[in-house]
Length: 336
Image (tube, rainbow, N blue to C red; front, side):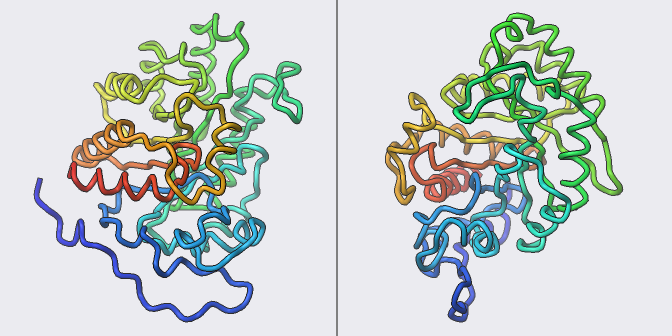
């Protein structure tokens, strides 16, 4: 592959004035600024952006989480390495077109959001505050609600900055998993009923699982038929990245599509245990070089095939999502 001019040159951030009181500025001496500059269509980012422990990595100064939630995105998007972010709050409750538009206004034109669909349509059960499933969710896989509460406001608000819309199906009751064929038919009907375009925007739909038993050739065939991407979800409930890579290769044996990855959780940990171990998310604690190597290979292959790449990392993957992405970018540059 021909080397693109400036492809792996280190970015030199412009001089910035001292921020006014209450403003959030990007970190001036962050190690992230030494990251190789990857092709525009390879977008790396984190799950959310409002972590006070990222002082010196993403943000200058000390800021409470509430301030970073409201004012930190613009500073985050000034770090050249960070070209996407996962909007995780949309999983817990839908947001409005106006709120999406406010996010879009804070980031440059090349930036692209990964947006999680609301649990209202992704969770088969209604859960209590501690996450325990109580009763069946009557809105599970309801395409009308998904269109109204996610697709339309997201595309209208984000416009060209809308990236993959990820339907992360929460852990399913045993009865639904045992009837996998019927569930896959239901998923097919759901995706078939979602809007295929809205004005000039064509949504990118992706499915992420929390039940490893569903990762089958039947599911992949259905996704291919519906033009839906399989989101590689790295989580303790799911198989290792190599098996998911093989499943994705089966899906792409027809018409290859964009690569969507959510590097969520270090294997062997529950979410809360990882959070307690890694907080305040300012350093790598449990590095996972093998996963990083495979993801770099997948990203390079996808880019060389003319496909777009979105990879988001969670703090619970290795301890600090920004530092995970720095090392991943170096691996990808080596592959390219």
